[in-house]
Structure formats: C-alpha cells, structure tokens
Length: 282
Image 1 (cartoon, rainbow, N blue to C red):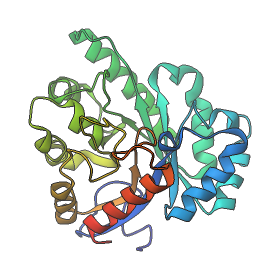
Image 2 (image 1 turned 45 degrees about the horizontal axis):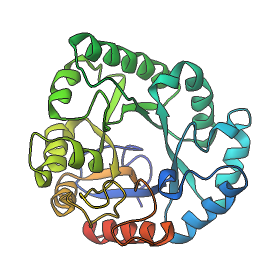
Image 3 (image 1 turned 90 degrees about the vertical axis):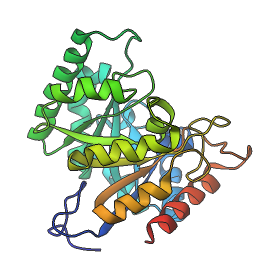
C-alpha cells in the first residue's frame, strides 16, 4: 500500500495507473445492524477480510449522533474504518450537521446523498436537486468531506437521460461524482444491461471519486453477489486497471439471499469480495 501522498483518499490515480483499494461492506447487506448488534457485526466484517464499513445515517448510525467518540472506539476495537455514510437527502436539514460530526470524528470523507423523487420530471426539479446538492457540497467541503449524489431507482438520477440533464447543473468544484454499478445496470435502460455501467464510468471517469460495486439480475434484483448478475464486471475491472483507481470501494448487496436462496450474509460478502479481488488481480 502506498502512502497517502501517492494517491487521493478516494478517486483517480494521479500520474500512475495502479490500484490502491480499500474494501468496505455496506450495512444494508447485513440488515443495517444497530444497538447491541453493531459491535459484533463490525468484528464479523473484519473477519471476512474487509477494511471498513459503509452505513446509513438513519439506520445504524443515528444512535451515535450524540456520542461520535463511541463510534470511533467501536471501529477502532474492530480494526475497521468508516468508509462512507449514506444519507437521505430529505433529512439533510436535520442530519447533515451530526453526520459530519461523526465523519470528522472517525476520519470518514465520503458522503453519499440518496433522494427519491416524483416520476414526473421537470426542468425545475432538476434545478432544485442540483442546487440542493451544491449547497450540501459547499457545507461538506468546509468540513473536509466529499458529498456525492447517489444514482438510485426512483431518484433524480435514475438513467442516462437524467444524468445528461442534471450534470450541467452540478457544481463539480463542490460535489464529487460516484457510481453505483448495480443501480446503473438495473436502471439506465437506454442501453443494453451489459453496456450500462462501463459506459457510465467511461464517460465520467474524469469526475469519478467513489465506487459502489453491486450486481443485478432479473431473479434476485439488487440482492445479488458480485459476478452473479448482468453487470459486466470483467469490462469494469479491465477499465479500472487500465485507468487506475484509488481509495474506497463499497461492496453492496441489498439483502442477504443472493442467487442461491438461503446463503448467509457472511457467505455472500465473502463471495463478492473474493470475486472483486480476483477480477482486479489484487
């Protein structure tokens, strides 16, 4: 592993095409553990081979809002880092301050903002959410945090068309670009499934800052271990190796069933991590 002066904490390699990656498991895959289940979950994630976790602000982290040092101790005791926090955009007025306090306490820099919007699209809707993200990004930058708009089903960013209309309105000096490969593969219907994620990455690599690797198929939806769905990870891995990527990658699966029903979250998390490492040769 290179030192922090060699690469950004998250994002593209500067000046050399090498992979420096830290792996995080998304709490959603485990049912968003909280309370007395939180510490055992952290230790379990560590035992499987992950370097960190990604959590929802309102499903697992909310109990730490008034005691951020307790979260830092829990992570330290497990030998893990907080890689990223997912926050519902509608809760930003209430949660953004406490969330950023938690992130600063734990050294976490990646904030993913998720929004669910009406199906009907209007120019004013794109403008509203772009302005909202720009304001959040400005506040986050002042705290050393990188705010991202998470592409998601039924969100303002659910397909290539949304992206083409929204991207010019985003202030990329304040907001960072991320991609969830599972949602791109599921939702970006203007292209065949196999082309969606790699096209999205290819067209926006100069802005890429953070990746969530997730798969999708018609049988298990987004509840699919990496490599068992329609996402063309072979192409994505080849692209990443050719261009270089550094920092955190969150491995995400919406729940714990997987393609073969009955597999545990542990097994699915291990399958996905091993698949990604093998595919990238690291």
